[in-house]
Image (cartoon, helix red, strand yellow):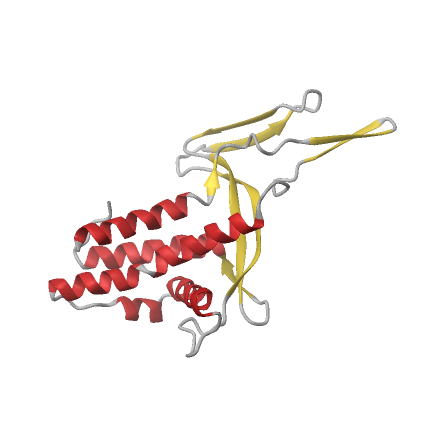
Length: 203
């Protein structure tokens, strides 16, 4: 039982980590000459495969949401109280991920969504995400040499420059409910706390 739950937790972390890559070589600046002026454009989504992005998003949602049933089985086996449904009902991010999973599986919800919204993923694309670290003075940069077109990135104090999947979660009226990556990260953190409360140490 522990081996199965441990594997599922590892799959969740792997799916979250797969949303971004530090390899920026696939994206190259494009230069154009217009008289005396040279313009430069960088499209970080130019070569992204929309199906691959959708698959990555679906995989992450499924791996997060399915922790519920695996933890429920663990608790039943250990004769421990299961609080997963209470977590879904009380945590917006966990509820949104759970609803996205159910809609992806069944095409439509047959009961009231746990988040109160018929959520969907909108604006799925690949973008450059620059993130500073937690250390004081942390920095990150992305620069392009206008003469050679060479790209340079760097960071200090735990910063990072990554090509990442980005999207928003919206309701049935296209009102934004939250950032996709942030929502999923918060849901993972919430399930981590629930796992710890049940005596399960994350791998």
